[in-house]
Image: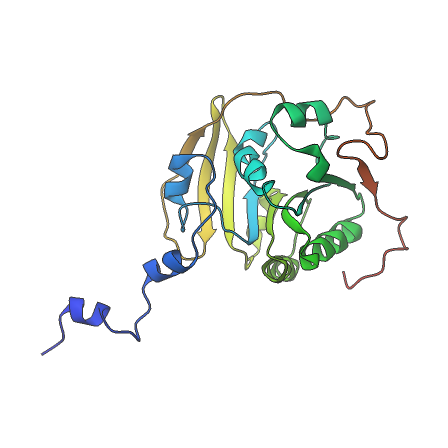
Amino acid sequence: MAAPVSQLLARTDIWLGRQWQQDNPGTGSGYAPLDDLLAGKGWPQVGVVELIGDCTGLGDLLLPVLKAQQSSDRWQLCLAPPGQPYAPAWADAGIALERLVWVDAECRKEQLWTLEQALNSGRCSLILAWLEKLSGSEARRLQLAAQKGGCLLFLHLPESVLAEHHAVALRLGVVASQSGCTLRLIKQRGGWPAPDLPLPLPHRPVPHAPATHRFQQGGPAAEVTMPEAGVVQGPW
């Protein structure tokens, strides 16, 4: 006679999906409906999270986790954002500017090199980055580097990346709406498919500076400019 399901589930040599969630608790997103959607009840503690689609004006989606990460003594890094970060707006949102670094790298090779170095260093707790494209092998390298350095990397990417498989911790489709955004769960480790999630977000000005504004060297969230193209050498 076949063993009852309860007996099979009690076997130590059978892996259960909930075991992954118990062993890998998440970092609260600040939004209860989103936490319920995600395995571990929150963002992954380390690894790559891909936000796929137009996220313009949706900075509040990541503001709670960014503020939570600033309780550590490590850096938070912002790489190649679509607009120049505006220090007063970040400060008004509760971000400690002395722990925030803006890296201005326009060349794709420099962007990937910078990300891998920052992730491997172990000096960053969270990175926000915007890339125009990313291959499957590049995504895998960044995921491994994030795991090694204990860092959480949020990658903003266009929908064209959906054509490739990316071995990352989490992939979310993002569609802006009048009240916030709608999130589509594309892939997550240790989780299950779920319906799209309409997520209301508080409205605040996008923390980007006017086109003529630039941070002063040595000031809060000072700009860090990468070397000229050809100086940075790496495997990318």
